[in-house]
Length: 428
Image (cartoon, rainbow, N blue to C red; front, side, top):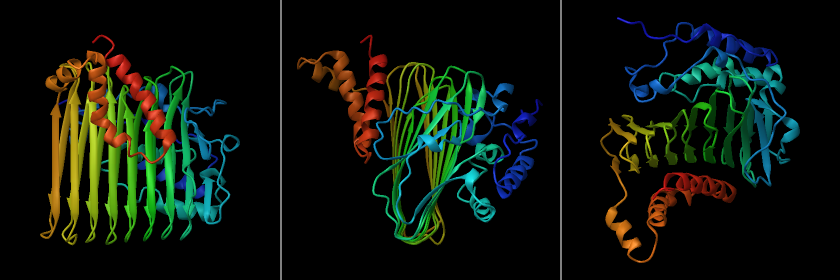
């Protein structure tokens, strides 16, 4: 029997030494735990559709240096933090000067602060499901710690621009930890962009810890170039009466993967997850979500939609787990998928695992193509066939795009979606 491929030892060596000692010790500990870690294969259940797209070269074992480029594609007029190749760039950032809200680079933490953070990093994630979050824990060179004191309210969205740039192969490991105090509020926008043509691995982790009554909106926009392999994980821990809302918009690439894990551990917590993915050419995008209802009287609503064109491949795997003590849970999951060509592929797997009796749960998934009768109806009323295809396809996802609560993100997503339609329907 052929042995499973292992993670190269080159990926386990720490890159920089500017982190505070407690974080360096944590990184070393997690690097040791990765020794002989098998890479996912077709037999790895949550990677069975994506393992063939994963390509880790020796060049990617090298961490990318910080570059001088700090541009961003969003028209950001408010608060922003720029990371270049996973390292915070203070001179390109504009921080909120508000009581109760602090934003710090990991490299700027004192020993006491780093000690506390070292205990928190990774606490929101199931690393057996988000395997590559372990690699991030062994390789991050910097990160952003965002703290909201009880009652603190950020009056504008905070944009975090993740820029990856390099003229040679390498890797970057952005890391964010958000600690939201009781009854605090914030909207966080993460945008992933890239410069250059080199093949690069981006392995990112973002974590949210919500205290009682905290209200967090997370927006994730993945628009990196065709040369970027992106493997990301987001972990969320919700306490009593907290609310978390997520909007993810993803454009395909050689490998795109996002694991989103939410745990509702406090009674009355609510979560809402929206996701839109489009792929074309030979692109790939894999969304894995998991919602754990641990406490009673919690609710979750999840809606994801995929569009795949040409020979591209999109995956949705959503799991809702209702624990034994999570009575009166209310959970709903819906996934709709649209195939624009016979050569495209979409795989969907909604899962419900229920161990409580008094619950309301539902899930559904559909895969189909554009309705020819609807296309004919529009064409018969003077609309060109190409325009009819665009209108129907845009309508399929516009319900979710229109719910994104930040105008700059909606506009940027619309521009990229229009580019997608232009390429997809150019010959119709």
